[in-house]
Figure (tube, helix red, strand yellow):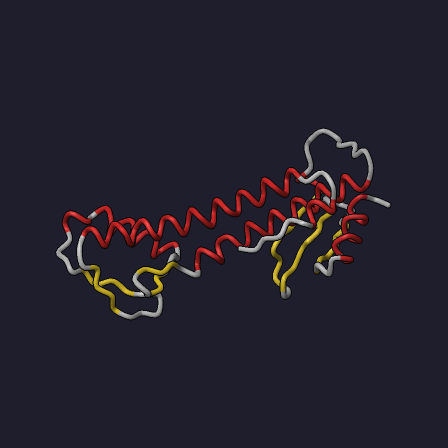
Length: 175
């Protein structure tokens, strides 16, 4: 059985939605979907330029499974970041715009007159009282972003180190 068919069979057994596209004029492609939206797309072009000889199909399936699971981590990490962070009982945004705003605010901390009004994630006014609070606020934001990125990286390293499908399957993203 060709490797893409073997991989497709494994994903089907895991109830992972996918389409196997075999275009005679192009690469074989696997598209993975979540509620109809393509979340990951692989094709034979992602393989190394040199022909790959897999010792057996189980190793090839593991290789593709690792890529898929790592893609799942890459999709979950920004979603976790977008949940925001908590400071003094209020939730603040960590969207790309918000991160740029928090960075600019912190950079200009010596030029700001306190208290300084900012918005919570649900658009309520919040007053930062002084530079000390702004520093605490800013460091909390950085810690949340870096924490999600670091925990995602650690999961991906674990997944890459798995030598058997069962080892990979035992790794759970509990973030």
